View 1 (tube, rainbow over the protein chains, first blue to last red):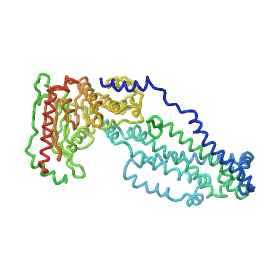
View 2 (spheres, rainbow over the protein chains, first blue to last red):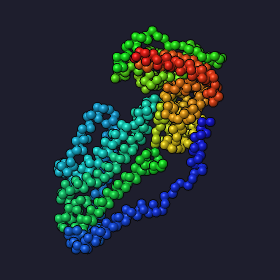
View 3 (spheres, each protein chain N blue to C red):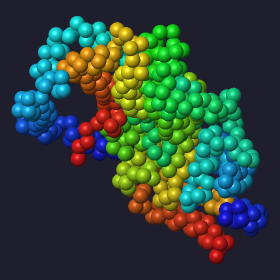
View 4 (cartoon, rainbow over the protein chains, first blue to last red):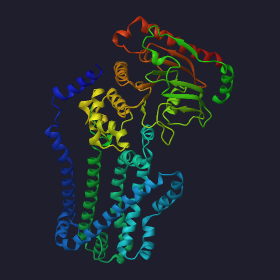
Length: 285
Length: 298
Protein backbone atom coordinates (compact mmCIF):
# COMPACT_ATOMS: atom_id res chain seq x y z
CA UNK A 1 0.00 0.00 0.00
CA UNK A 2 1.11 3.49 -0.67
CA UNK A 3 1.56 4.66 2.87
CA UNK A 4 3.43 1.52 3.84
CA UNK A 5 6.60 2.58 2.09
CA UNK A 6 6.66 6.00 3.65
CA UNK A 7 6.04 4.48 7.03
CA UNK A 8 8.94 2.11 6.62
CA UNK A 9 11.15 5.03 5.85
CA UNK A 10 9.94 6.72 8.99
CA UNK A 11 10.27 3.52 11.01
CA UNK A 12 13.87 3.15 10.01
CA UNK A 13 14.69 6.55 11.34
CA UNK A 14 12.65 6.12 14.48
CA UNK A 15 13.22 2.57 15.66
CA UNK A 16 16.52 1.23 14.44
CA UNK A 17 18.02 4.66 14.87
CA UNK A 18 21.77 4.16 14.81
CA UNK A 19 23.30 6.24 17.58
CA UNK A 20 23.45 9.80 16.27
CA UNK A 21 27.02 10.93 15.80
CA UNK A 22 27.55 12.61 19.18
CA UNK A 23 29.57 15.78 19.17
CA UNK A 24 32.89 14.64 20.60
CA UNK A 25 34.04 16.24 23.87
CA UNK A 26 37.14 17.65 22.19
CA UNK A 27 34.93 19.36 19.60
CA UNK A 28 32.79 20.96 22.31
CA UNK A 29 35.83 22.08 24.29
CA UNK A 30 37.22 23.54 21.11
CA UNK A 31 34.05 25.51 20.45
CA UNK A 32 34.17 27.20 23.87
CA UNK A 33 37.89 27.02 24.48
CA UNK A 34 39.13 28.73 21.33
CA UNK A 35 37.17 31.99 21.62
CA UNK A 36 37.67 32.24 25.39
CA UNK A 37 41.37 31.45 25.05
CA UNK A 38 41.85 34.03 22.30
CA UNK A 39 40.04 36.64 24.36
CA UNK A 40 42.20 35.93 27.41
CA UNK A 41 45.33 36.03 25.26
CA UNK A 42 44.35 39.42 23.84
CA UNK A 43 43.83 40.87 27.32
CA UNK A 44 47.15 39.40 28.43
CA UNK A 45 48.91 40.90 25.41
CA UNK A 46 47.34 44.27 26.23
CA UNK A 47 48.55 43.97 29.82
CA UNK A 48 52.09 42.92 28.77
CA UNK A 49 52.30 45.78 26.28
CA UNK A 50 51.51 48.28 29.04
CA UNK A 51 53.98 46.73 31.50
CA UNK A 52 56.83 46.31 29.01
CA UNK A 53 56.51 49.77 27.44
CA UNK A 54 55.57 51.47 30.69
CA UNK A 55 52.61 53.25 29.05
CA UNK A 56 51.15 55.85 31.40
CA UNK A 57 47.53 55.12 32.46
CA UNK A 58 46.26 58.44 31.06
CA UNK A 59 47.30 57.29 27.56
CA UNK A 60 46.22 53.66 27.76
CA UNK A 61 45.11 52.08 31.04
CA UNK A 62 45.94 48.45 31.81
CA UNK A 63 43.10 45.88 31.93
CA UNK A 64 43.48 45.85 35.69
CA UNK A 65 43.03 49.61 35.91
CA UNK A 66 39.88 49.39 33.78
CA UNK A 67 38.48 46.64 36.03
CA UNK A 68 39.28 48.70 39.13
CA UNK A 69 37.60 51.74 37.64
CA UNK A 70 34.57 49.67 36.75
CA UNK A 71 34.34 48.55 40.38
CA UNK A 72 35.04 51.94 42.00
CA UNK A 73 32.92 54.05 39.65
CA UNK A 74 30.01 51.60 39.57
CA UNK A 75 27.84 54.06 41.48
CA UNK A 76 28.31 56.60 38.65
CA UNK A 77 28.25 54.15 35.75
CA UNK A 78 25.27 51.99 36.82
CA UNK A 79 22.64 54.79 36.62
CA UNK A 80 24.14 55.86 33.28
CA UNK A 81 23.90 52.29 32.01
CA UNK A 82 20.25 52.16 33.09
CA UNK A 83 19.49 55.38 31.23
CA UNK A 84 21.13 54.09 28.04
CA UNK A 85 19.36 50.74 28.34
CA UNK A 86 16.02 52.43 28.87
CA UNK A 87 16.43 54.62 25.80
CA UNK A 88 17.65 51.72 23.68
CA UNK A 89 14.86 49.33 24.59
CA UNK A 90 12.08 51.91 24.53
CA UNK A 91 13.29 53.02 21.09
CA UNK A 92 13.47 49.41 19.91
CA UNK A 93 9.96 48.66 21.19
CA UNK A 94 8.58 51.75 19.47
CA UNK A 95 10.47 50.86 16.29
CA UNK A 96 8.99 47.35 16.35
CA UNK A 97 5.46 48.63 16.77
CA UNK A 98 5.94 51.41 14.23
CA UNK A 99 7.91 49.34 11.72
CA UNK A 100 5.56 46.38 11.70
CA UNK A 101 2.48 48.59 11.80
CA UNK A 102 3.60 50.79 8.93
CA UNK A 103 4.74 47.76 6.91
CA UNK A 104 1.26 46.24 7.23
CA UNK A 105 -0.32 49.50 6.10
CA UNK A 106 2.17 49.91 3.21
CA UNK A 107 1.47 46.48 1.69
CA UNK A 108 -2.29 47.00 1.76
CA UNK A 109 -2.22 49.09 -1.38
CA UNK A 110 0.26 50.25 -3.96
CA UNK A 111 -0.99 53.84 -3.54
CA UNK A 112 -0.22 53.95 0.15
CA UNK A 113 3.22 52.52 -0.49
CA UNK A 114 4.01 55.05 -3.22
CA UNK A 115 2.81 57.86 -0.98
CA UNK A 116 4.54 56.93 2.27
CA UNK A 117 7.68 55.00 1.44
CA UNK A 118 9.72 58.05 0.27
CA UNK A 119 9.30 59.62 3.71
CA UNK A 120 10.60 56.50 5.39
CA UNK A 121 13.62 56.50 3.05
CA UNK A 122 14.34 60.19 3.62
CA UNK A 123 14.23 59.71 7.38
CA UNK A 124 16.59 56.77 7.03
CA UNK A 125 19.22 58.25 4.74
CA UNK A 126 19.58 61.54 6.60
CA UNK A 127 22.50 61.05 9.00
CA UNK A 128 21.19 60.93 12.54
CA UNK A 129 24.04 63.14 13.81
CA UNK A 130 22.83 65.86 11.46
CA UNK A 131 19.27 65.95 12.72
CA UNK A 132 20.03 65.34 16.40
CA UNK A 133 20.69 69.07 17.11
CA UNK A 134 17.36 69.94 15.52
CA UNK A 135 15.57 67.31 17.54
CA UNK A 136 17.18 68.74 20.67
CA UNK A 137 15.58 72.08 19.87
CA UNK A 138 12.13 70.71 19.04
CA UNK A 139 11.78 67.88 21.56
CA UNK A 140 10.33 68.80 24.97
CA UNK A 141 13.39 67.42 26.78
CA UNK A 142 16.73 65.78 26.05
CA UNK A 143 15.54 62.29 26.90
CA UNK A 144 12.76 62.37 24.34
CA UNK A 145 15.16 63.77 21.71
CA UNK A 146 17.49 60.82 22.32
CA UNK A 147 14.54 58.47 22.15
CA UNK A 148 13.41 59.89 18.80
CA UNK A 149 16.94 59.56 17.37
CA UNK A 150 17.28 55.93 18.43
CA UNK A 151 13.77 55.19 17.17
CA UNK A 152 14.43 56.69 13.73
CA UNK A 153 17.53 54.58 13.24
CA UNK A 154 16.10 51.28 14.49
CA UNK A 155 12.79 51.79 12.71
CA UNK A 156 13.89 51.53 9.08
CA UNK A 157 15.53 48.08 8.98
CA UNK A 158 12.48 46.65 10.72
CA UNK A 159 10.14 48.41 8.29
CA UNK A 160 11.98 47.43 5.11
CA UNK A 161 12.52 43.83 6.20
CA UNK A 162 8.89 43.53 7.20
CA UNK A 163 7.66 44.99 3.89
CA UNK A 164 9.89 42.53 2.04
CA UNK A 165 8.58 39.67 4.18
CA UNK A 166 4.93 40.56 3.72
CA UNK A 167 5.46 40.69 -0.04
CA UNK A 168 7.37 37.42 -0.27
CA UNK A 169 4.47 35.16 0.65
CA UNK A 170 4.15 32.04 -1.55
CA UNK A 171 1.68 32.95 -4.30
CA UNK A 172 0.11 29.52 -4.28
CA UNK A 173 -0.64 29.87 -0.58
CA UNK A 174 -2.24 33.26 -1.31
CA UNK A 175 -4.32 31.55 -4.01
CA UNK A 176 -5.28 28.86 -1.52
CA UNK A 177 -6.48 31.46 0.99
CA UNK A 178 -8.46 33.15 -1.81
CA UNK A 179 -9.97 29.81 -2.77
CA UNK A 180 -11.27 29.27 0.75
CA UNK A 181 -12.65 32.80 0.84
CA UNK A 182 -10.30 34.00 3.59
CA UNK A 183 -10.86 37.58 4.70
CA UNK A 184 -8.04 40.15 4.51
CA UNK A 185 -7.65 39.90 8.26
CA UNK A 186 -7.42 36.08 8.18
CA UNK A 187 -4.85 36.19 5.37
CA UNK A 188 -2.77 38.68 7.34
CA UNK A 189 -3.00 36.80 10.62
CA UNK A 190 -2.64 33.22 9.45
CA UNK A 191 -0.47 33.64 6.36
CA UNK A 192 1.34 36.93 5.85
CA UNK A 193 2.53 37.53 9.40
CA UNK A 194 3.86 33.99 10.04
CA UNK A 195 5.45 33.89 6.57
CA UNK A 196 7.31 37.13 7.22
CA UNK A 197 8.55 36.06 10.66
CA UNK A 198 12.09 35.24 9.39
CA UNK A 199 12.31 38.69 7.79
CA UNK A 200 11.01 40.30 10.96
CA UNK A 201 13.67 38.52 12.98
CA UNK A 202 16.41 39.76 10.64
CA UNK A 203 15.04 43.28 11.10
CA UNK A 204 14.92 42.82 14.86
CA UNK A 205 18.58 41.75 15.04
CA UNK A 206 19.73 44.70 12.94
CA UNK A 207 17.37 47.15 14.67
CA UNK A 208 18.45 46.01 18.16
CA UNK A 209 22.10 46.76 17.46
CA UNK A 210 21.32 50.04 15.71
CA UNK A 211 19.08 51.28 18.56
CA UNK A 212 22.04 51.13 20.95
CA UNK A 213 24.38 52.81 18.49
CA UNK A 214 21.84 55.55 17.77
CA UNK A 215 21.22 56.13 21.48
CA UNK A 216 24.96 56.67 22.00
CA UNK A 217 25.41 58.85 18.89
CA UNK A 218 22.44 61.01 19.82
CA UNK A 219 23.83 61.48 23.31
CA UNK A 220 27.16 62.56 21.87
CA UNK A 221 25.32 65.06 19.71
CA UNK A 222 23.44 66.32 22.76
CA UNK A 223 26.81 66.78 24.48
CA UNK A 224 26.64 68.62 27.76
CA UNK A 225 22.94 69.28 27.18
CA UNK A 226 22.39 65.71 28.30
CA UNK A 227 23.84 66.41 31.73
CA UNK A 228 23.52 63.50 34.13
CA UNK A 229 22.31 61.10 31.45
CA UNK A 230 23.58 57.92 29.80
CA UNK A 231 26.84 56.11 29.23
CA UNK A 232 27.86 58.24 26.25
CA UNK A 233 27.68 61.32 28.43
CA UNK A 234 29.89 59.58 31.00
CA UNK A 235 32.35 58.79 28.20
CA UNK A 236 32.54 62.45 27.22
CA UNK A 237 32.79 63.56 30.83
CA UNK A 238 35.64 61.11 31.53
CA UNK A 239 37.42 62.36 28.43
CA UNK A 240 37.22 65.99 29.60
CA UNK A 241 38.59 64.93 32.98
CA UNK A 242 41.30 62.76 31.39
CA UNK A 243 39.93 59.86 33.45
CA UNK A 244 40.88 57.35 30.76
CA UNK A 245 40.31 54.18 32.86
CA UNK A 246 36.71 55.23 33.54
CA UNK A 247 36.27 55.97 29.84
CA UNK A 248 37.35 52.42 29.10
CA UNK A 249 35.05 51.11 31.81
CA UNK A 250 32.09 52.89 30.19
CA UNK A 251 33.18 51.50 26.84
CA UNK A 252 33.28 47.96 28.26
CA UNK A 253 29.72 48.41 29.56
CA UNK A 254 28.54 49.63 26.14
CA UNK A 255 30.18 46.69 24.38
CA UNK A 256 28.69 44.26 26.88
CA UNK A 257 25.26 45.80 26.31
CA UNK A 258 25.69 45.45 22.56
CA UNK A 259 26.71 41.82 22.87
CA UNK A 260 23.79 41.14 25.22
CA UNK A 261 21.30 42.72 22.78
CA UNK A 262 22.74 40.69 19.93
CA UNK A 263 22.56 37.50 22.01
CA UNK A 264 19.02 38.23 23.14
CA UNK A 265 17.67 39.00 19.65
CA UNK A 266 19.47 35.97 18.21
CA UNK A 267 17.94 33.79 20.92
CA UNK A 268 14.44 35.14 20.25
CA UNK A 269 14.98 34.54 16.54
CA UNK A 270 16.19 30.99 17.09
CA UNK A 271 13.37 30.15 19.49
CA UNK A 272 10.69 31.31 17.09
CA UNK A 273 12.15 29.76 13.92
CA UNK A 274 13.81 26.58 15.14
CA UNK A 275 10.86 24.33 14.35
CA UNK A 276 10.51 25.20 10.70
CA UNK A 277 12.84 27.73 9.14
CA UNK A 278 15.97 26.77 7.24
CA UNK A 279 18.04 29.45 8.93
CA UNK A 280 17.55 27.88 12.35
CA UNK A 281 18.01 24.25 11.33
CA UNK A 282 21.18 22.26 11.55
CA UNK A 283 22.21 20.97 8.19
CA UNK A 284 22.90 17.28 8.11
CA UNK A 285 24.03 15.33 5.08
CA UNK B 1 4.28 35.86 -32.12
CA UNK B 2 1.29 34.53 -30.21
CA UNK B 3 -0.72 37.49 -31.32
CA UNK B 4 0.10 36.83 -34.95
CA UNK B 5 -0.56 33.10 -34.75
CA UNK B 6 -3.85 33.27 -32.92
CA UNK B 7 -6.16 34.62 -35.64
CA UNK B 8 -4.99 32.12 -38.24
CA UNK B 9 -5.54 29.24 -35.81
CA UNK B 10 -9.00 30.43 -35.16
CA UNK B 11 -9.86 30.59 -38.80
CA UNK B 12 -8.53 27.14 -39.53
CA UNK B 13 -10.44 25.53 -36.69
CA UNK B 14 -13.51 27.63 -36.26
CA UNK B 15 -15.77 24.92 -37.67
CA UNK B 16 -14.00 22.08 -35.96
CA UNK B 17 -15.89 20.23 -33.22
CA UNK B 18 -14.09 18.18 -30.59
CA UNK B 19 -13.77 14.57 -31.74
CA UNK B 20 -15.96 12.34 -29.62
CA UNK B 21 -14.61 8.88 -29.04
CA UNK B 22 -16.07 6.17 -26.89
CA UNK B 23 -14.07 3.30 -25.58
CA UNK B 24 -16.55 2.25 -22.93
CA UNK B 25 -17.00 -1.40 -23.85
CA UNK B 26 -18.70 -2.47 -20.64
CA UNK B 27 -21.10 0.38 -20.21
CA UNK B 28 -23.21 -1.16 -17.44
CA UNK B 29 -22.01 1.17 -14.70
CA UNK B 30 -20.97 4.15 -16.74
CA UNK B 31 -24.35 5.86 -16.58
CA UNK B 32 -22.83 8.74 -14.65
CA UNK B 33 -20.51 9.51 -17.52
CA UNK B 34 -23.03 9.10 -20.32
CA UNK B 35 -23.43 12.41 -22.11
CA UNK B 36 -26.57 14.36 -21.29
CA UNK B 37 -27.52 12.51 -18.12
CA UNK B 38 -28.03 14.54 -14.96
CA UNK B 39 -26.85 18.05 -14.20
CA UNK B 40 -23.23 19.10 -14.25
CA UNK B 41 -21.16 19.76 -11.17
CA UNK B 42 -19.51 22.49 -13.14
CA UNK B 43 -19.89 23.63 -16.71
CA UNK B 44 -17.63 25.93 -18.67
CA UNK B 45 -19.54 27.82 -21.31
CA UNK B 46 -17.49 29.34 -24.12
CA UNK B 47 -14.66 30.28 -21.79
CA UNK B 48 -11.77 32.25 -23.30
CA UNK B 49 -8.77 33.73 -21.57
CA UNK B 50 -6.39 36.32 -22.96
CA UNK B 51 -3.53 37.36 -20.70
CA UNK B 52 -2.47 40.98 -20.41
CA UNK B 53 0.59 40.33 -22.58
CA UNK B 54 -1.69 39.25 -25.44
CA UNK B 55 -1.18 35.49 -25.11
CA UNK B 56 -4.38 33.64 -25.93
CA UNK B 57 -4.43 30.89 -23.30
CA UNK B 58 -7.91 29.50 -23.98
CA UNK B 59 -10.44 29.93 -26.76
CA UNK B 60 -14.10 29.05 -26.54
CA UNK B 61 -13.80 26.13 -24.14
CA UNK B 62 -17.08 24.47 -23.25
CA UNK B 63 -17.01 21.48 -20.94
CA UNK B 64 -19.65 19.87 -18.73
CA UNK B 65 -18.34 17.83 -15.82
CA UNK B 66 -20.90 15.46 -14.31
CA UNK B 67 -21.10 14.17 -10.76
CA UNK B 68 -18.70 11.33 -10.03
CA UNK B 69 -16.60 11.76 -13.15
CA UNK B 70 -12.82 11.58 -13.13
CA UNK B 71 -11.84 13.96 -15.91
CA UNK B 72 -8.25 14.39 -17.06
CA UNK B 73 -7.14 17.47 -18.95
CA UNK B 74 -4.27 16.21 -21.07
CA UNK B 75 -2.08 18.28 -23.32
CA UNK B 76 1.37 19.68 -24.04
CA UNK B 77 2.68 22.49 -21.88
CA UNK B 78 1.22 25.84 -22.78
CA UNK B 79 -2.12 24.43 -23.95
CA UNK B 80 -4.02 26.25 -21.21
CA UNK B 81 -4.98 23.25 -19.11
CA UNK B 82 -3.78 24.80 -15.86
CA UNK B 83 -5.38 28.10 -16.84
CA UNK B 84 -8.70 26.28 -17.35
CA UNK B 85 -8.39 24.66 -13.92
CA UNK B 86 -7.62 27.98 -12.24
CA UNK B 87 -10.59 29.62 -13.91
CA UNK B 88 -12.83 26.82 -12.64
CA UNK B 89 -11.42 27.37 -9.14
CA UNK B 90 -12.16 31.08 -9.39
CA UNK B 91 -8.45 32.01 -9.24
CA UNK B 92 -8.71 33.93 -12.51
CA UNK B 93 -11.53 35.64 -14.35
CA UNK B 94 -12.35 34.35 -17.85
CA UNK B 95 -11.99 37.03 -20.56
CA UNK B 96 -15.19 35.72 -22.17
CA UNK B 97 -17.74 33.04 -21.36
CA UNK B 98 -18.78 31.80 -17.95
CA UNK B 99 -18.35 29.02 -15.41
CA UNK B 100 -21.57 27.70 -13.93
CA UNK B 101 -22.28 25.57 -10.87
CA UNK B 102 -25.74 24.07 -11.34
CA UNK B 103 -25.53 21.92 -8.20
CA UNK B 104 -23.89 24.31 -5.74
CA UNK B 105 -24.88 27.19 -3.54
CA UNK B 106 -23.11 30.24 -4.90
CA UNK B 107 -21.50 32.76 -2.57
CA UNK B 108 -21.09 36.51 -3.03
CA UNK B 109 -17.99 36.10 -5.18
CA UNK B 110 -19.80 33.84 -7.66
CA UNK B 111 -18.02 30.74 -6.39
CA UNK B 112 -19.53 27.59 -4.95
CA UNK B 113 -19.55 27.70 -1.17
CA UNK B 114 -16.81 25.39 0.09
CA UNK B 115 -17.41 22.92 -2.71
CA UNK B 116 -14.00 22.99 -4.34
CA UNK B 117 -10.70 21.49 -3.21
CA UNK B 118 -7.49 22.41 -5.03
CA UNK B 119 -4.15 20.61 -5.12
CA UNK B 120 -1.30 22.61 -6.60
CA UNK B 121 1.71 21.33 -8.49
CA UNK B 122 3.78 22.04 -5.39
CA UNK B 123 2.56 20.75 -2.01
CA UNK B 124 2.08 24.42 -0.97
CA UNK B 125 2.13 23.74 2.76
CA UNK B 126 2.72 26.36 5.43
CA UNK B 127 6.16 25.45 6.82
CA UNK B 128 5.40 26.98 10.23
CA UNK B 129 2.38 24.74 10.78
CA UNK B 130 2.36 21.06 11.62
CA UNK B 131 0.74 18.54 9.30
CA UNK B 132 -2.39 18.80 11.46
CA UNK B 133 -2.34 22.59 11.28
CA UNK B 134 -2.04 22.51 7.51
CA UNK B 135 -4.97 20.16 7.03
CA UNK B 136 -7.01 22.08 9.60
CA UNK B 137 -6.51 25.36 7.69
CA UNK B 138 -9.63 25.31 5.43
CA UNK B 139 -11.80 24.59 8.46
CA UNK B 140 -10.05 27.25 10.51
CA UNK B 141 -10.77 29.81 7.80
CA UNK B 142 -14.44 28.87 8.08
CA UNK B 143 -14.25 29.70 11.76
CA UNK B 144 -14.51 26.15 13.09
CA UNK B 145 -12.68 25.51 16.35
CA UNK B 146 -9.82 23.07 16.49
CA UNK B 147 -11.43 20.86 19.11
CA UNK B 148 -14.68 20.60 17.16
CA UNK B 149 -13.02 19.31 14.00
CA UNK B 150 -10.08 17.40 15.49
CA UNK B 151 -11.63 14.06 14.63
CA UNK B 152 -12.53 15.13 11.12
CA UNK B 153 -8.94 16.24 10.46
CA UNK B 154 -7.46 13.11 12.03
CA UNK B 155 -9.79 10.86 10.00
CA UNK B 156 -8.66 12.61 6.85
CA UNK B 157 -5.01 12.16 7.82
CA UNK B 158 -5.65 8.48 8.52
CA UNK B 159 -7.23 8.14 5.08
CA UNK B 160 -4.05 9.35 3.40
CA UNK B 161 -1.92 7.26 5.76
CA UNK B 162 -0.40 10.10 7.75
CA UNK B 163 -2.15 9.76 11.12
CA UNK B 164 1.21 9.20 12.82
CA UNK B 165 2.63 12.38 11.38
CA UNK B 166 0.01 14.85 12.61
CA UNK B 167 2.57 16.68 14.76
CA UNK B 168 5.40 16.61 12.23
CA UNK B 169 6.44 19.72 10.32
CA UNK B 170 6.37 19.68 6.51
CA UNK B 171 10.17 19.83 6.27
CA UNK B 172 10.35 16.46 8.03
CA UNK B 173 8.29 14.74 5.31
CA UNK B 174 9.26 13.26 1.96
CA UNK B 175 7.93 14.76 -1.28
CA UNK B 176 5.21 12.13 -1.59
CA UNK B 177 4.06 12.60 1.99
CA UNK B 178 3.87 16.38 1.55
CA UNK B 179 1.68 15.84 -1.49
CA UNK B 180 -0.58 13.60 0.59
CA UNK B 181 -0.95 16.32 3.20
CA UNK B 182 -1.91 18.65 0.37
CA UNK B 183 -4.55 16.18 -0.85
CA UNK B 184 -5.86 15.69 2.69
CA UNK B 185 -6.20 19.46 3.04
CA UNK B 186 -8.13 19.66 -0.24
CA UNK B 187 -10.52 16.89 0.83
CA UNK B 188 -11.04 17.84 4.48
CA UNK B 189 -13.93 20.17 3.64
CA UNK B 190 -15.63 17.27 1.80
CA UNK B 191 -15.81 19.19 -1.49
CA UNK B 192 -18.03 18.17 -4.42
CA UNK B 193 -15.19 18.87 -6.83
CA UNK B 194 -11.48 18.18 -6.45
CA UNK B 195 -9.11 20.01 -8.80
CA UNK B 196 -5.57 18.70 -9.19
CA UNK B 197 -3.00 20.71 -11.16
CA UNK B 198 -0.24 18.31 -12.28
CA UNK B 199 0.07 17.29 -8.65
CA UNK B 200 2.63 14.52 -9.09
CA UNK B 201 4.73 15.98 -11.91
CA UNK B 202 7.69 16.62 -9.62
CA UNK B 203 7.67 13.19 -7.98
CA UNK B 204 9.56 10.05 -8.90
CA UNK B 205 7.79 7.32 -10.87
CA UNK B 206 7.37 4.93 -7.92
CA UNK B 207 5.86 7.53 -5.59
CA UNK B 208 3.75 8.78 -8.42
CA UNK B 209 2.17 5.37 -9.08
CA UNK B 210 1.39 4.96 -5.39
CA UNK B 211 -0.23 8.35 -5.21
CA UNK B 212 -2.22 7.61 -8.38
CA UNK B 213 -3.62 4.53 -6.65
CA UNK B 214 -4.34 6.61 -3.55
CA UNK B 215 -6.21 9.24 -5.53
CA UNK B 216 -8.30 6.53 -7.19
CA UNK B 217 -9.03 5.00 -3.79
CA UNK B 218 -10.08 8.37 -2.36
CA UNK B 219 -12.20 9.03 -5.43
CA UNK B 220 -13.99 5.69 -5.07
CA UNK B 221 -14.56 6.10 -1.35
CA UNK B 222 -15.69 9.70 -1.28
CA UNK B 223 -17.58 9.92 -4.58
CA UNK B 224 -15.96 13.28 -5.24
CA UNK B 225 -15.80 14.57 -8.81
CA UNK B 226 -12.23 15.06 -10.00
CA UNK B 227 -10.61 17.23 -12.65
CA UNK B 228 -6.99 16.20 -13.04
CA UNK B 229 -4.50 18.19 -15.12
CA UNK B 230 -1.59 16.15 -16.45
CA UNK B 231 0.80 15.92 -19.37
CA UNK B 232 1.23 12.17 -18.97
CA UNK B 233 -0.70 9.92 -21.35
CA UNK B 234 -0.20 6.95 -19.03
CA UNK B 235 -1.42 8.77 -15.97
CA UNK B 236 -4.55 10.03 -17.70
CA UNK B 237 -5.30 6.59 -19.16
CA UNK B 238 -4.85 4.92 -15.78
CA UNK B 239 -6.95 7.31 -13.73
CA UNK B 240 -9.70 8.77 -15.80
CA UNK B 241 -13.24 8.04 -16.73
CA UNK B 242 -12.90 10.73 -19.36
CA UNK B 243 -9.90 12.37 -21.02
CA UNK B 244 -10.07 15.82 -22.58
CA UNK B 245 -7.13 16.23 -24.96
CA UNK B 246 -6.10 19.86 -25.36
CA UNK B 247 -4.22 21.65 -28.07
CA UNK B 248 -1.98 24.69 -27.75
CA UNK B 249 -1.93 28.09 -29.46
CA UNK B 250 -4.62 28.89 -28.78
CA UNK B 251 -5.56 26.45 -26.02
CA UNK B 252 -8.71 24.45 -26.66
CA UNK B 253 -10.19 20.98 -26.28
CA UNK B 254 -9.70 18.89 -29.42
CA UNK B 255 -10.79 15.43 -28.28
CA UNK B 256 -13.20 14.19 -25.64
CA UNK B 257 -12.54 10.54 -24.91
CA UNK B 258 -14.85 8.58 -22.60
CA UNK B 259 -13.21 5.61 -20.90
CA UNK B 260 -14.48 2.86 -18.63
CA UNK B 261 -14.93 4.24 -15.16
CA UNK B 262 -11.80 3.28 -13.23
CA UNK B 263 -13.58 1.19 -10.59
CA UNK B 264 -11.21 -1.75 -10.63
CA UNK B 265 -7.82 -0.42 -11.54
CA UNK B 266 -4.76 -1.71 -9.78
CA UNK B 267 -1.35 -3.22 -10.47
CA UNK B 268 -2.78 -5.90 -12.79
CA UNK B 269 -4.59 -3.27 -14.84
CA UNK B 270 -1.29 -1.55 -15.44
CA UNK B 271 -0.02 -4.53 -17.45
CA UNK B 272 -3.32 -5.46 -19.10
CA UNK B 273 -3.99 -5.32 -22.83
CA UNK B 274 -6.93 -3.01 -22.17
CA UNK B 275 -4.69 -0.44 -20.50
CA UNK B 276 -2.31 -0.64 -23.45
CA UNK B 277 -5.18 -0.02 -25.87
CA UNK B 278 -6.41 2.92 -23.81
CA UNK B 279 -2.92 4.41 -23.78
CA UNK B 280 -2.70 3.96 -27.55
CA UNK B 281 -6.04 5.68 -28.08
CA UNK B 282 -5.19 8.62 -25.86
CA UNK B 283 -1.71 8.79 -27.29
CA UNK B 284 -3.05 8.93 -30.85
CA UNK B 285 -5.43 11.72 -29.94
CA UNK B 286 -2.60 13.66 -28.37
CA UNK B 287 -0.35 13.08 -31.38
CA UNK B 288 -3.07 14.36 -33.70
CA UNK B 289 -3.32 17.47 -31.58
CA UNK B 290 0.44 18.01 -31.70
CA UNK B 291 0.75 17.23 -35.45
CA UNK B 292 -1.89 19.69 -36.49
CA UNK B 293 0.00 22.34 -34.64
CA UNK B 294 3.24 21.43 -36.32
CA UNK B 295 1.61 21.55 -39.77
CA UNK B 296 0.25 25.00 -39.06
CA UNK B 297 3.64 26.28 -38.13
CA UNK B 298 5.57 24.32 -40.75
